[in-house]
Image (cartoon, rainbow, N blue to C red; front, top):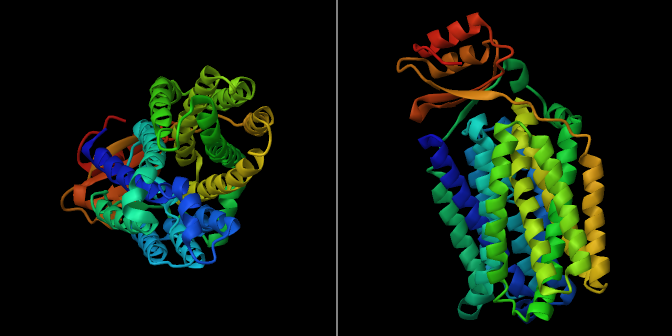
Length: 454
């Protein structure tokens, strides 16, 4: 990775971590402390927790479509501002309805997909999966950390203090946004003038993207349901309190990620993404069905969860990378927005389903979740390999008119996408080598005033 990519991963990863911790550290404690709010009922407490995910699901698509029309970083800043305001509204609440409003306001700052699209803009195809895998680990680790630190901090800060901390994290995320490179995306003229309806239609008609949306829905439905069911099993079988359970999640997560890394490399380097993807979904089916059989025993519970986390990390790494490869160049954020909406809808329904499954036997609960992943495997099985393009970095000539220069590069045969970073003096080109001709190679070398090895 070059310095620009490292800076982008650090900045975007930090923003994701601050948002996830701010969101999820409330989850394990709110059912206990939420009852102290005026007008609180079990239903309203659950609504206060879950409405954030519903807000994310609703607003991901419009925010992402806007980010395909306008610069991405201002959209992210606006979303973080809403997240901070939501935290302040909830922190100053005295009744449960104000908390619900605050959580809904925070949820409307739905910028996860825009962040992923920004990261895709400033990373080359060759390192895209590695960058997305880093984001997957960052998100998963942040969730686990939040489950561990939320119960520890609420004793000293109180529930309102946790909401204030959410607002502080949002402000820190705004500061981190400053270190992320600011790209200038260059599109062919016929793509730049698409209407909103054309954007959405073009993305929705791509069958493989829809299969990826199904897979992320099932992934986050089962994950959320698991975190409703597993705490009770960890308490009953291993005798662990809520505060101690993070000590189980974190090692399993890191071991799962360490095992997943070689397969992530194979998926990209050996162009085996379809095989790795389908194997990960199948592994999760096996993990959930093994939990149905063996979760009454400590070793069965640990092994089943470990297998699930391996598949989880593989899908979290490959799905965003796959979307960035398959999505239309002009509508990358829109495609990621639909995927993120599917993700949060899965989490919303997973929480509700997990609550229902708590009243069922463990065999039934795990078998139902395994069945859901099995259906997802069947629906996604026809998916084809993503297109494998390549990227190269070009230095921008010092005296060049960047707008005219970048458009000239974009119109060259074989160039699929151009992302310009004026402050850094470089441009990323996504290339289809099958369409590159000797003339286009020569033209690109003339435009950069150096000989390019492409």
